[in-house]
Image 1 (cartoon, rainbow, N blue to C red):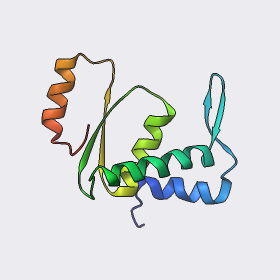
Image 2: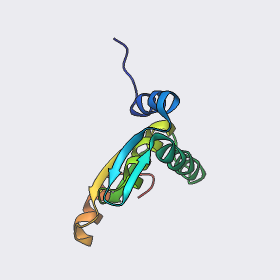
Image 3: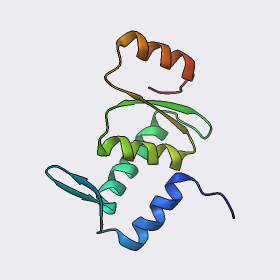
Length: 105
């Protein structure tokens, strides 16, 4: 079986079921199309920021739809997403950033 990048699975669902719910939130839901629009915008931002295939992007975030979209956007660009919890102390985040050798944080 051929390997698949993370965004390829998402993109398949986006093509087939764009209007179907993907994420359920306390105040509503987001469809594949909703997240797809976020992925597109973030993909553009990553490219404009100079992120290239093989780069690492350190994502400092809590669990939220934007985190999901940024992971998928990194996959589309060909970059590696490295997620860390936004509740970490500044020193811990700095240590992760140094270890990750990320193109962008």
